[in-house]
Image 1 (cartoon, rainbow, N blue to C red):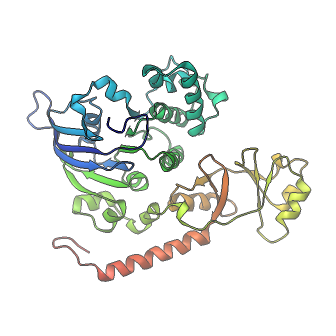
Image 2 (cartoon, helix red, strand yellow):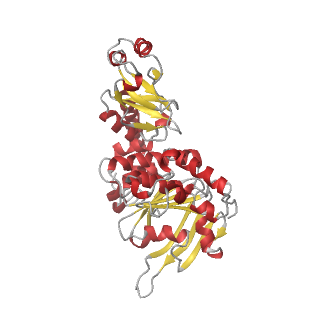
Image 3 (spheres, one colour):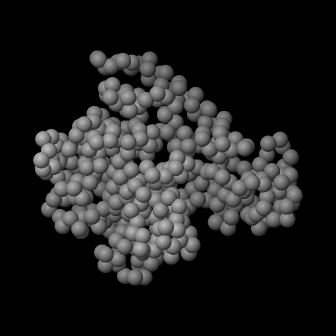
Length: 396
């Protein structure tokens, strides 16, 4: 590809009148799709089962060959490229991870770099780098087999494998659809964090509109045979659905969904006293103080959150590693305010810890901050509604 996968930066993808018709079928599975996927953005294809969204995505890396039309990546026609080489230059992550069961985690992650000729030393270094990137300790996980991992851990390995050769494009086919809701939210946060750091071009397929709003820079709402009903930013689709079908996808609670359009990094974070697990409990007790509701945060050697503790709890133990209670949930700077609100509501003290790109502590967010943001959003939308002209044929 023109910019080359060695750079790893996202590149533009363009589909022009792309169709797919299977032998013996009267109608095309995909009919004349034209769209541009901007470099470095996450574009989500959302639609009901059978709408052709997965078929459309798989034509990009030629797992399914188009019947007609043109697909270009970084200006190059993919139909003129060797399909095996093309697929090695495009990351691919699917539901239930698709890991090879007879290979270790390290062998799975290093498979594509090995195929494209990287040295063993470089592959080994990349495996550890990728596992660390997706939040799995290399020394603990690289020699395990997929059957020894949870569903969420397998999906993390799947994402690490897709990114291992530093491709500019990542295709994701409902990658989090087979895990429980809590794990799914964590994996979504991880993907947003990774994308903020890496800037890949991501094409993501889902049937879940809430997931599309959370993850997408742009959303393509697809109808029958991948007909594009609306292709726009999540904000624009929530504020003004193109037709009744799109409005049906948006569903109730559009105002609350606006919280998924605001990232934690966009708000001013609070802070709490922190200490290392090796620090003096008595000293930390004094730093937290006796103010009602005051809490502190114990961090590990990499500045990652370990435990919440009050002054009283800190003073009752010989080691801060046992003080208070574990940090059960956290949000990243790339997380949405919806995620932050959910974490706050499930926390005993009504506060969510915020972490950086490597899981390190960067601050906290509380309910007052989120409520003030909701108030501001309501005022913004009230102003917009006051000046909006309703399109003919649509209800306001």
